[in-house]
Image 1 (cartoon, protein in one colour):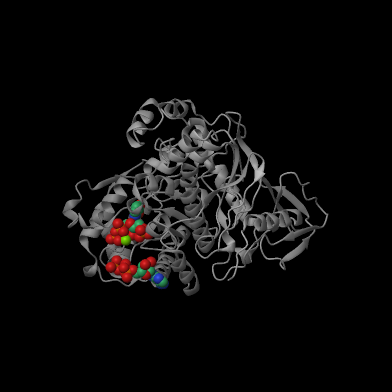
Image 2 (image 1 turned 120 degrees about the horizontal axis):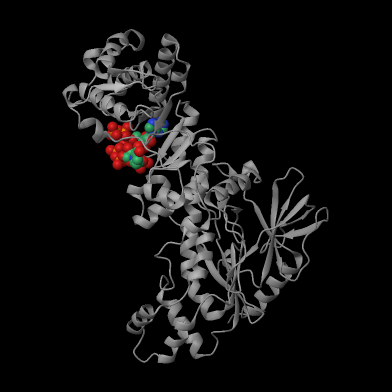
Length: 556
Ligand SMILES: Nc1ncnc2c1ncn2[C@@H]1O[C@H](COP(=O)(O)OP(=O)(O)OP(=O)(O)O)[C@@H](O)[C@H]1O
Ligand SMILES: O=P(O)(O)OC[C@H]1O[C@H](OP(=O)(O)OP(=O)(O)O)[C@H](O)[C@@H]1O
Ligand SMILES: O=C(O)c1cccnc1
Ligand SMILES: [Mg+2]
C-alpha cells in the first residue's frame, strides 16, 4: 500500500550498521585542497606525526533557537574505517599538486589510514549546545588535518536538518504525523538522501523518498499528485468498473455505487451535484480501485468544498459498502486552517448520518510550502490537520541554510593551543577536555561543564563552580543531582569500539534527549540560552594562555 497510514508498531524494519553503509561519495579525497597542501608542508617539516587534538563544535545554535541535535556521527565513524588514498586518488593528486612535489610524499599519502586516530564524541541524537566539542579527534597532525573537511561536511548538514525536523516536531506536537516530502527540492541527490535520514532521526514519521526507505529502513509514505486528477476527464476514463468486497464475498459495479452516493450525499453535505468535477470523481474512483484499503485523495485540484470533498466522501462511502475504510484527504492550497476545519465538520456530518465513527478520524494531510512558523500560526488559529507533508522548508533549511561547525586545533604534542580573535566568542578553548552535563533533581539539564581532561569529574551532590568561559562576572555554583560524561570513544586503534545505534534507536534517543531540556530553552520565540561553562581551573588556564598569546600593543 502506498497511501498514508500510521506507522505500525515496530516499524521500520531496520537492521543495524550493515545497511546504513556509508555514502560512496564520502572518501579521503572529499576534502579541501588546502588540507592536502598542509599535509605536504607538515610532512616536509617533519611535523606530520605530531600528536594533535582537534575539537569539532559550533558557536551558535541554528534557526534563532537555543538547542541543536547532534547528527552525522555514524558516517564520521565509517569514514575512519574507509579512510585511505587509493592508487587512482594518488595519480589524480599528482596532477593537482605542483610538479616539484617530492614523489616520496605520494608514498606517504598512500600509506595513510585512520589506525592511529582516536575519535571521541557526544552520542548521535543528543541535544547539544555552542562551544561544546561534539567530536574530539586525537592523532597524527597530518591525518587529522585531512579529516577536517569531510567531518565538518558530515556533521553540519546532518545536525542542521535534524534540528529543523525536531523543531517542526515540537511545533506540530507529538500526535501529528509528519512526512518529509523534500526530495524534489533538496540540494541534489545526496542532499535529498541525507535530509530523509536525518529528518527521521529528528522526529519525522516517514518520507516520500523511496531510496531512503530502502537504504535506511525509513517508512515510506505518500498520496498522489494533481496530475493524477487532471489526467481524468470524465467517467468514461474509468475502464474497469467492478470491485470486489474486502472479504472477497462479492463484486459490485463500483462506479454505479459511487453514483448512488453522489445522489444521496448532497442532503448531508450541502453540495450541488452539477458542480462536482466528473474527471476528479473518475480519478478518485480509479485510485480507490487501485488502493481500496488505502484510499487517500488530494481534494484541492478544482474546488475543495464544492467538488473535492464531495467526491472523496462519495467514493469513501462506496468503499465502505464493500467493507473498506478510507484513509483521508490531502489539502495542498488555500487557507489550511479554514479548509481543514470545514473538511472535519463535513466528516462529522457523514459519520453521524451513517453511524460510522471512523469517518470522524480520517486523516487530513496538509502540504504546500509549510514552515515552522506556519505550523505555529495554524495552531493559534485552530485547525483539524493531523498530518503534514513538508518539503522545501524542511530539507533546504530555508530559515538558516548552514550550521557553522568548525574544527580547531586545541593541543599539539601535549601543549594546549589557543586561537585568538577580535570576536571573543571565537577564541578557542584550549587543551584536551572532558565535557559533563549536570542535571537537577527534576532530571532536567542545568549546565554543560568543560574541564581539563586531567581534572576530577564533578560528583553528584557536590557543589561545583561553573564559570562562563569568557565573562569573568558570570558564574554559578551548581549542586548536580546527577552527572553525565557527554563524550564516548567510538573509534580507537583502527577499530570501531562502541556500538553504533540503528536509525530507529537514534530517533528515540533524540526524543529522550529533548525531554531533558527545559521548555524555555526549546520555545520558538526568544528562547533562554542554555549555559555552557568551564571549571575554575580551565577558566584561569584559558585566560593565562590568552594573555601569553596576545602581544601587548604600544601607543605612540
Ligand atoms: N491559515 C493559514 N495560516 C497561515 N498560513 C497559511 C494558512 N493556510 C495556508 N498557509 C500558507 O500560506 C501559503 C499560501 O500559498 P500561496 O499563496 O501559494 O497560495 P495557494 O493557496 O497555494 O494557492 P495556489 O496553490 O492555488 O496558487 C502557503 O505557504 C501555506 O502553507
Ligand atoms: O510545498 P513543499 O513543502 O515543498 O512540499 C512538497 C510539495 O511538493 C508537491 O507539489 P509541488 O510543490 O511540486 O507542486 P505544487 O506547488 O503545484 O503543489 C506537493 O504538492 C507539495 O506542495
Ligand atoms: O506523496 C505525496 O503526496 C507527495 C510526495 C512528494 C511531494 N509532494 C507530495
Ligand atoms: Mg508547492
